Structure formats: C-alpha cells, structure tokens
Image (cartoon, rainbow over all chains, first blue to last red):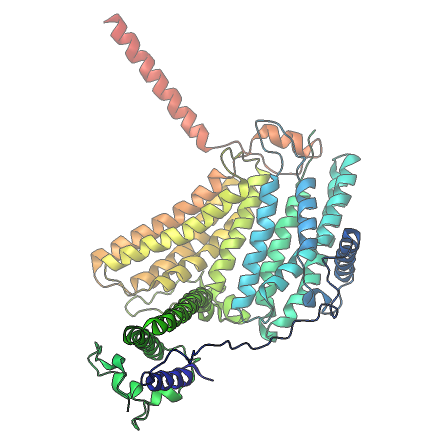
Amino acid sequence: MPILHRNRYLTTIFAGLSDVSISGDIPVEGEINVPVGTPSHDDEYSTLDEPVKDTILRDLKAVGKKFVHVMYPKKSSTLLRDWDLWGPLLLCVTLALMLQGGSVDSKEDGGPQFAEVFVIIWFGSVIITLNSKLLGGTISFFQSLCVLGYCIMPLTVAMVVCRLVLLGGSGMVSFIVRLIVVTASFSWSTFASTAFLADSQPSNRKALVVYPVFLFYFVIGWMILTFSPSA
Amino acid sequence: MASSDGNKNTNTEPWGGFDDNIIQGTGSAVIDMENMDDTSGSSFEDMGEMHQRMKEEEEVAEEAEATEEETGEDGEFLGIKGIKGQLGRQVADEVWQAGKRQASKAFNLYANIDILRPYFDVEPMQVRNRLIESMIPIRMINFPQKIAGELYGPMMLVFTLVAILLHGMKTSGTVIREGTLMGTAIGTCFGYWLGVSSFIYFLAYLCNAQITMLQMLSLLGYGLFGHCVVLFVTYNVHFHSLFYILWLVVGGLSTLRMVAAVISRTVGQTPRLILCGTLAALHMLFLLYLHFAYHKIVEGILDTLEGPNMPPIQRVARDLPVVATAAMNAVNATVKTLVQHISIA
C-alpha cells in the first residue's frame, strides 16, 4: 500500500480514537504478530559447517577452471557468471614477487617495487573498467576486474619463462627469445580479454575498448621484458 | 467530525498547505498528491511526503499527550504504552529517513559517473580524425573555431604518454629517489594535462575568451598527440639534432593548432598575445622537459646493459650538463681570480 494512503488511513483512525473515553476495564492492548516462516535450514547446505579442506578445494577448483578458460579463450560465460577475485590476486602477487628481484644496489632501483606492480595492475584495471562502462558497456564492475585479472595469466607464464631463460645468460639471443615469448603472451592476453569484454559493447565501439586493454598489457609485458636480475 | 487537537494551523509555507485537507479525513477535497506513487524522486513530492509525515507524527504525538492528560492512572498506563509505541514508531521513522538519505547520497555518487558519460560518446572514426586534425593548424582566426568536447581521446593520449615516458625512463636508467617510476610518470602527465588546462582556462577567463573548461581539456589533450609521436621516435633513435627538428616541426604544428583555436575565440590584441604566448611557451617547454629530464643516457649503465653487442645507437652524453659544467667552470675561474685579487689587495 503506498505510504501516503497508509498515512491517511492511520490519520483517520487516530482522529476517530480521540473521542473514545477509555475506561479501566477495557485495556486496549495486544500484539500483532505476523508469523514469518523461518527459512528451512535443511534446504541449503550451510557452507560454514563443512571442513576447511572442502572449502579450499572447491574454491581452488573454481579458480582452476577459470584459468583453463583463459588459456583456451572461447566465448563462454563462466568467467562472467561466477566472478571471483582470488585468481587475479594470486596472479598479481606472483607477478609482483617475481619482478622483485632486480638489483638491490642502493644507488639504483633495478626493478619495480612490489607496490608499484600491484598498483599498476589494480589501478589500470579500474581505469579500463570505468572506461568501458562510460562507453556504454553492459558488464559490471567486478566482472570486468575479474576478466582483466585472469587474463594476466599468460604474462605470468611468460615471466616464469623469462626468468628461466635469464638463468642461461643475458646476451642478444636470450633477449630475442624473451622478446618473442613476451610478445606472444601479451597478444594472447589482449585477445583473451577482448573475447570476454568486447561482447558487452556496441559493435562499432569495440576498438575504443580494446585500445586501453592493449596499452595495459603492453605496459605489463614491457615491465617483464626489461626486467634484469641482480648481477 | 471529531476535531482533533492536532488541527492547529502549523502552516508555515506561503502556498497554503496540506493541513486542511489531510486532517479532516472525510473531506471531499482530496489532494492529488495522494494518488502519486511513492517511488518518486522529485524533490517537490519528497518534500510533500516528508512534510506530511512530520505533520502526522506531530499530530499523533499530540493525540497521545491529550489522551494521557485526560485519563487517570490507567489512561496514564495506556499513555505510557502509547508513548512507547509512539517512540518506537518515531525511531523507526528516523531510521528510515536516515537510510533514505544515505541511499540518495550513494545514488548521487554513482550518478556522478553518469555525468561524464556524454563526453565519452565517440566513434573510433571520430577519434582518428581528431588525432589527425590536431596536427593541422587552421588559419581562420576571425571566426570562432569549433572545438570538440570529448574526453576519451585526451585520456587515452595521456595514458599513452605515460607508457612512452616509462619506456624512456627505463632505457635511460633514470633513478628516482623519492617515489616510483610509475608514480612520477603518471603525476607528470596528468599534472600537466589538468594543471595547464586549468591555468589556461583561468587566463582565458581573465582575457574574456569564449572557451569552456571541457573544450580546453580536450584541446590540450589532443595537443599531446604531437608530444607522443616525438617522444616515441626520439626515445628510440637518439640523435639530438633529430630531436630538435621534430621538436620544432611536430611540436610547433600542434602548438599552432591549439593557439589558433584559442585565439579565434578571443577579442583584442593584448589578450590574444597573452594567451598565445603562455600556451605556446608551456607546450613547447613541456616537450623539451620531457626529453631532457627523463632521457639522460649514462654511458656506464649502457655498457653493463648491452654488453659487447651494442646496437648502432649514437651514444650522446648529456648535453645540458655540458653547458652547465662549462658555465660552472667559468664561474669558478672568475671567483678564484676575484679572491686572489682581493687577497692580494
């Protein structure tokens, strides 16, 4: 019942009651209880009661399934439907830790700090999300963060490969190998994320959304490429 | 009709009020406001609803007081219970009001993003055309030139400039002591775009130029396209003479374009001169600063990075400090001779 109608109704009731002289033996009191059906706890399995191992395994499985979706990007809505931010956090922390071991010489900062990588990834994701929303996208804020975070995975793999290659030496050959690996993974990342993100845009504006994503992964890929461990 | 005690005229509004029609429930004069849905967001209707709620609460509180006064102990008992009931209802109402206020605040915050939405309403073709046009100065300055008011292109250009700057800083081994590379790059680029836009807008306001803040942001943002091109080329190909040529040609073209657009919207010789001079100076000097401040190649670092396979890059030592060291040597020599003269004398 609309609020004004109800107010009018109550007003008329109270207006009428002011006439009534209340004598002692007619107590006007009572309770109006609307019995609310308690939700049956047997219907849903309460996830608070299960052992911790089950919870962790279930979450890990979900994260792993999304990794697989990123590695073979086809148009599925799993990443979008059950979004979560565990995968992006894991990837971000791994990448930041691996980029950490630059030269610790006090005179120069060889590599980016942990905080720098973290901030770049999250700040960049937020900017891209806002941009795609402002351009008229239908994807929600956290779904977009989830997609962008998961698509950093090829770049993390490239980082591992680069570190292994750098163990062998840092000459021209290793530079070319690293360049090829990083370029391949960066284009893979961009392609994977546009497969998810571009669907939510009107068709003639896809390029406008793809460019910031390209720039974002380009900056990350370039940070990986120019990483040189302490001598 | 029972005359309720709450019928006193607390009407403070000049346009009459809701008092008369609402409290006499059986009156046939019914305000149309009753029939509105209460999901309205307009302030007039909200004000009306709030006003009515306040009236109703007031009136009900007065009812309770009246009944409490009139009756004896039992009435008082009822009155207390009544007041408790009233208190509960009032508290609930307050909570509802507070919740509603917070929700509308949150909605306004979200709606602020929607304020920016029209400025991002562009097609890729338009962006490409505007990028090309930003390098082509238009000579018509007696009639106001059209300036596009969009923010997508300028923002993407600023981020591209940040990326290019990062690349330049890394390859030249710039050391940032307080802060990080990324922070410096972002701060420089965004600071320039927002700060200089605001400053020129302020000058334009003083010089009575017809340009809005959005147009200024857009103009300056697209003017950074020239900067991006020049820096991208010269951070990879390190010929200094090439940089100077590009600085003059590309930087000059984009500056001329911006200056012509601003001048076409200003009247009078002196204001035009002020705006033109300031904008040109700031824009060209920024490009100079970006090249030299973040591009010092230190030869030692190049050796350790590249190793024996050196790409055919012409390694040029810093040329600014060359001038500086020459000047310092001259000053030192002068001071030395002066001191000698003074000590002899």
